[in-house]
Image (cartoon, rainbow over all chains, first blue to last red; front, top):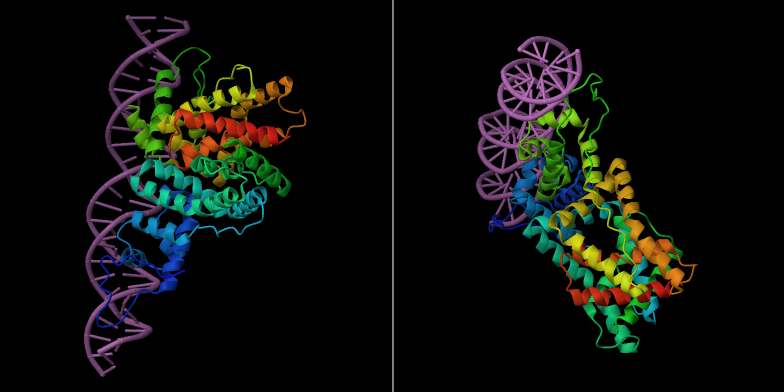
Length: 204
Length: 204
DNA sequence: ATCGGATGGAACGGTATCGTATCGACTAGG
DNA sequence: CCTAGTCGATACGATACCGTTCCATCCGAT
């Protein structure tokens, strides 16, 4: 995870020294998420974030010009991008694998609290909406690969409605975990995967 | 929609008079939701709510003891309960009907902004979690009826995993509309319904 | 008509956060 | 060694909300 800071008004010292400490930047991100999960996006106080990171407020305002800039870079730095899924041999096995990985992500309490807040905020501000769609497209990649492989195997037709299929795969697990707030057992995830697979086949 | 106010410390005047105006109570609910949608749950200011309803803050504090009590009664008064779905003759037709109704609900900008906030808040406070599960169980009713009819028709086995089935039905549409923030066309909803139906059959 | 009591509206003190500015201390390139 | 620039910390005025208190008004019972 690279150092990322908004260089908009940073002089970047042609003659040399004094670069913002990357470790502190990361600590600020982390503190921001902790506050976010605890109080909700709208109630995040930059003062508390700084204190939590063991820093002064100036450390924040020196790096980012506004709260939303801070939030945006923090979310991007979080890097929710899921690893691409390797080929497990069949569509159903691939879907099962995908759901188990998604389950791991959604078990993190931070994620469970922050994701819905992010979606709500996306409906409010265009800025967050852009951020949300960017995350969504990152998230789309592994699922798209999974579908391509299934088409290559002949398990799904090339005429498949990809967009709809990509909705179908993660939605039930997301619903169960984020909307209902319950974590399904491994057996339930397996069952869910088989139902989702059948749904995909029916999309043809 | 009945008048609902917290009578916890309301004297209710055995000798007669002075009842809080129901119209103002409703105006307060409405203003609360408007503020919620606009700023996010955590940032709702009771002062602005009162002002928006054309009332004083005392009008709020006289009715409810705390912000969360206010929020809870407001959500319950909102009455998101969807009407029970009449029998359309087949499982797929019932599912299609259900999804179209859900689409109507999720098109309301207020709902789209408030629901994810509610889920995030449910992960934070036990109070909101209780509220969320109560709403969820209300929401479950029409879907459960739909499944029962399908079992009665013989389209689904009695051994069906109802909980999983109830996740499967609304999830893809919720994902598309709330998580991705896009409203699917009527044709897409129809397609979604057929895929969901296939998934339900595969749950057997 | 009168009177008790709750009502709506406004004002109050207290607290928290904002975004900015400033301080001495420290660090690293030149 | 020197200088530029970050570091934590603190102070600042401004703003917004909180939760309470006070007051004039209005309504219903007697």
